Amino acid sequence: MITLEQWAEIRRLHRPDRLPIKAIAPMKGISKNTVRRAGCAPAHRITAHRAAMAALAPICESSLGWHNRIRLPRDHYVRLDTCDYSVDPAVIGRMVDVRADLGQVTVTCEGRLVACHDRSWVAHQRVTDPAHKAAADVMRAALLDGGEVA
Image 1 (cartoon, rainbow, N blue to C red):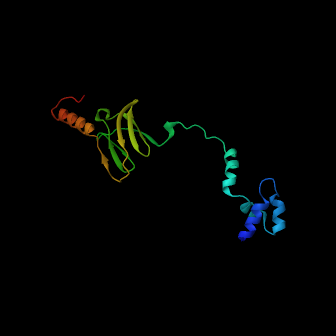
Image 2: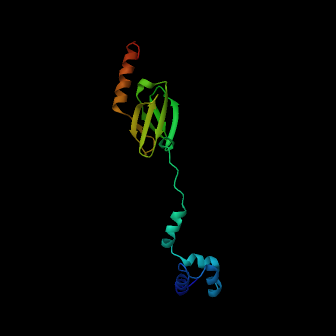
Image 3: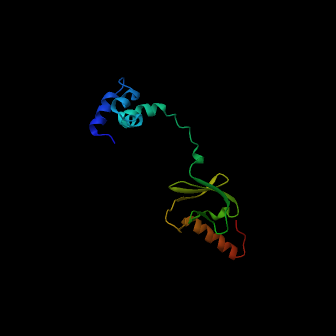
C-alpha cells in the first residue's frame, strides 16, 4: 500500500512527457503495476479510451426485445412471461408475430397490427382490450345462434 505522499509524487513524476513507469518504479521501490494504477486519474485517461473505442455497429430495431411466432389459440390471448394479452379474435387460428420490449407488447398478423398493449410487469395478469372482448362476444353470440362466424 502506498501513502498519499508517494501517490502524489508518482503523479507528479508521471505526468505527460515526464518519466516513464519503468523509471519511476525502481526509484520509488514499488512495482510497475502500482505506479501504473497511481500514475494517472481515470478522468485523464478517458480521452485516450474514447479515441481507442470503435463506433458501434447499427442495430436493426426488429432484433431488439422479445419476438415469437405462434398460432393464435381459441381463447384469443397470447402469453408473455406470466401475463396474457388479448388479441383481435378475427385472427384465431392464424399465425401471429408477438413482439415485446420493456414497455409494450404488439401482435401482428400478416403485417397488420391486431393488438397493442402496455406491458405488465405484475405476474399472472390478464390484459384485455375492450374492443377485443366486444368482438369476441359478437362472434360467440353468432356461433350460439347457429350462424357462421365471419
